[in-house]
Image (cartoon, rainbow, N blue to C red; front, top):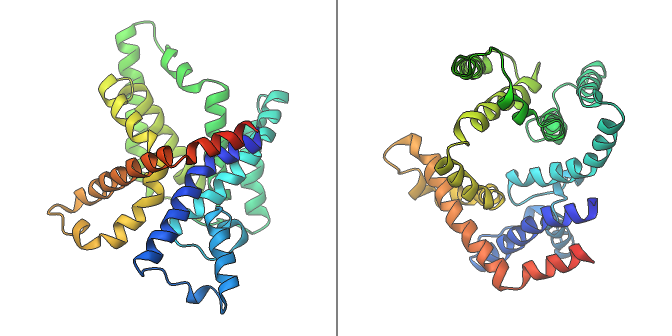
Amino acid sequence: WVKKRLISTLSGFWFVAGASYVVLYLFGRLNLSKWGDNNFKRILLASIDCLGLSDLLGTNTLRGAWWYMGAAIIFIILLPLLAWILGKWKLGGLVCIGLLSAVLRITGIGFPGGTNAFSFLTAFILGVLSQEYHIFNWFHCLHLVKNEKINDLLKFCLTAAGIAFGIWSYSKIPLKVFWEYHYAIVPFVLILFLVEYVFRLKKVRNVFEYFGKYSLDIWLLHTFVRDYLARYVWNVKYFLLVPVVITLISLVLGIIVEVAKKYSGYNKMIHYFIKK
């Protein structure tokens, strides 16, 4: 299972990373001189980066945002272990969160950093718990009072209040002291609200599902758009529209990438290795 999941998850990255190196090289925008004093070392480090291993091995990377692939590898490897723990002990997930938080603080390690997989392990475990125990469905069926309309209004007010408090307190609670709050608890409340009250609207859900198909491509490509198309992106009349413009351009590039993967035979090759 781990092998198949690693290949299916990383295959999209491999294509984008390899294509990025080639395109930048062809346009004369690839400078690997700081990566080593000989071509062998430069090619080796570029290959490690294209495999998604640069963050795990502490080597150079073409894009800082690509650190997440190392985190994805760690999460995929840990998932069967976490599933086994949950199968043996229902409270195992919460115990894992508690132990992780305690160990990082007792040992003096503290906040692992904003680009470290261990900073997001709590969010990962909450995601697994949500799937395992159908938390979103449980919340949807939850009845705090007998009256249906009052019950819906009460749940809406509670989750909306949770989001409002999260926004208010986000900058007040030090990140290095309670990073689980910033990276797991607040996002979880926001996702709970969106799933219950926003994504149930069919048209809205369809839009997000469409973006979701290209979410990995958007994430991998958005920094290229931000940096190499800066004079167009940052000249948008309204500053708040800048993220929207970056996302939309990244979406278009993501669609092109998916078409290229399909008609180049790349997808067929990946499916062959997954089934093998």
